Amino acid sequence: MVEPVMMAWVVAQTTAPVQEITLWRAVVIGIVQGLTEFLPISSTAHVKVVPVMLGWGDPGVSFTAVIQLGSVGAILWYFWDDLSTVTLKAMRSAFRREFDAPDFRLGLGIVLGTVPIIVIGLFIKLFVPGYDTSVVRSTAVIAITSIVMAILLGVAEMLGSRKRDFSSLGLSDGVSVGLAQALALIPGVSRSGSTLTAGLFLGLKRETAARFSFLLGMPAILLSGLVSISDVIGSDSRVALVPLLAGLLAAIVSSYLAIAWLIDFLKKHSTWVFVWYRLAFGAVILIAIATQTLENI
Image (cartoon, rainbow, N blue to C red; front, side, top):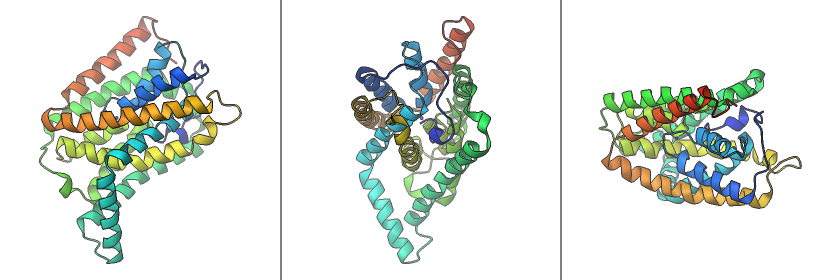
């Protein structure tokens, strides 16, 4: 499920071999980003590993963060009615001092849920300089975290009651899922995966947990992309404006399709397909590293 979201605040440009991002490569990376941002399988892992396996090198944190803005556009596109309703009702409740109103508590929960990933990201950026080494974003770390998060998602699938719908969401849910979202600062965790897992542990229905994950993730993804725009289009950037815009457009369309598909899928199916996929994805990477088919960069 950015991810990690806000990595542009945390990790500097990777030391992996890089090449110029052409129009075609930007479109492919945008599609990969869009299809994996909202599925609980880690977009950061796929946006890094797929180009490396194709021989293109790591596209870098800044480029990845900027094309994630396409995913924000897809959220606005798909959830415009939900977002406008929650925002207007939350503002109306605040103006009337109706602080116990469900919409106000939900809106405040989304705001407070965004705080942990921002605070922790800024803390690491300012006070943990060694965090920006290539080890942090290495393929081995991605593989291990993918496997660990697959196990946690499987446990949540087995233990979650899945009885609560969207109308039951409130302040405590925003804070709890927001703390889980902060785990996405670790490459390979998956923002959507960690928040979906937390939602299931909180007893939410699968589709409700997914919808809440999307809404909660929008501010963090937006901030991540905005703070990286200057880096990715600067004079020393290897990304031209046209490929960047093409990558953004590809991410918007593929993200929208992924959102629509996942919500419909979770109404009828469990998350086990993603658990098995993540286990296999992590295992394949570790095997490839062990056999020196894939470099641990």
